[in-house]
Length: 125
Image 1 (cartoon, helix red, strand yellow):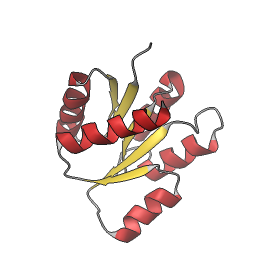
Image 2 (spheres, rainbow, N blue to C red):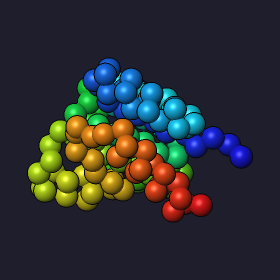
Image 3 (cartoon, rainbow, N blue to C red):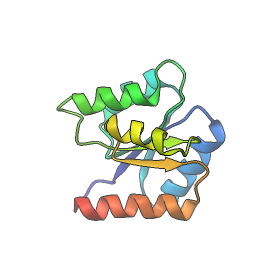
Image 4 (cartoon, rainbow, N blue to C red):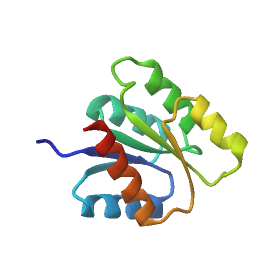
């Protein structure tokens, strides 16, 4: 059985490191991207199972990336979790209407991340 793959996209290095560390310790294959163009390239090349996607990114924002992925039939099955410091209902709705499967507000705990990922893979099994 192949490892579950996860792409973490954020322009804040400490978030990339902390999410990668937590997820790799759980046995997941994790790659990272720090801007929107790099994220789309890795999504197309690697077709990860899950993408943790920050909204505010250089070169292409998370909403644009999400829409591009969900409109492409070869990528639409990728589970996208939007990450944002904006926790208002309107921000959450915009993310979900844009095609995100989940929306998480920063900061979040490692336990919360692990629980989200486990639930996603359990439902997919």
